[in-house]
Length: 521
Image (cartoon, rainbow, N blue to C red):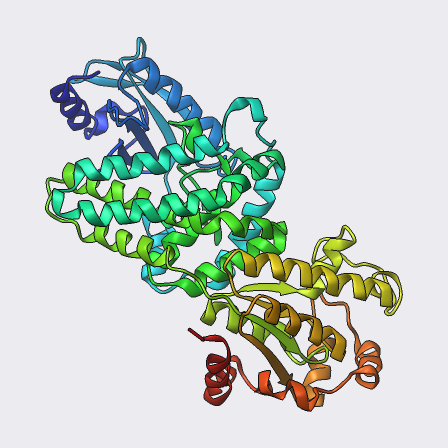
């Protein structure tokens, strides 16, 4: 089916309930630049448009059949209950029969879900929470870890393959936009190319270390839905293996970019934090900025294509907003290093959560990283009696060295970092201050105090947390703690954590003090 008139005839005919093998009371048509979706009561039928955009080719019936089956295979990995079958469309465009033979077209049959539960709409209503994104990020990290890595001979994920779609975005946008945008596109292309050249050896390294896998490929808020309050991906890329056999960080980058574009960097960094805690893939931060810019340019291109298909070629509002974001993403970064200081139960993780969301920084949690060093997940018990097991003096020194090494890696990737650890020893704090000095970067110590009764209550109330410190540990650490020295005071931000989260965020003097230390030109 290539004739446009036949396309329209078929889609019009499929809006009649008589075409369906089940009872239908209402039919609704949705359209994207690559497909039609017919919502027929409890089911949805997705038909691929006979188009060829270069990066996507559905121009023949055989190709559309193949890609329908690929869509089923790939998306059942995330949402087996949504993707039901590939359905023949027989008869004629004027009188189609779903499920008959021979087929002149194909459709993917899906279980319908409430459109209001798609995450972009959940966000618009102000109902998308940090907890939703943390749950999604953890699930995504687990999904990525279970996928088999790409074999180097397959050709996916090498620097040339990474460069190709990025270059194609600029080439296609240059054809879609008029000449008045050429200088801006050229500047953006140059910024992208500079970032690519910096990352080029890293792309090869990521491929060799197994970080290129058969991912979702199109992970933005419009392709995520709440099912039983669980964020669930759907509509992954089936049409081009090069766009789904990608770096796992590239997969995540689309979601992060989308949240930033929708003016929710706090949620983007909450999601990134949860993903990194689950995966430990801090090395991926070195290529994240390139992929964020790439994803912004993908959406700039797609927004122009959509505007043209909707007969609104002059509406470039969305396109320009993505160009603006790409320009911001490519700006030089001035990262900062922040550490916490405080005993168990003072609320270091709560305070560091506020910092990572409000200042857009990467968080390293000592409780999580200590367990990772010893092959444990964050929630796993080490069965260690502190100070034994993974909490010996040697294990603690090893943990702080790991935190120092990863902090250096993150900072050199252009991201600020907050290290959520007790830092009760002067020498521990000095090592991190010296790292900031070596890299000529801003440094701050967020010293957290709290009421002793509240502190003990928090420790007793802990559940499903990476920390294993109990009241006995608290008492031991109190006696071993080394106070902040006079020399350290120029870097100290004092935060009291005795009230609600709202009261904590309203400590203007403390946050202004942190601003003065880390927001340095």
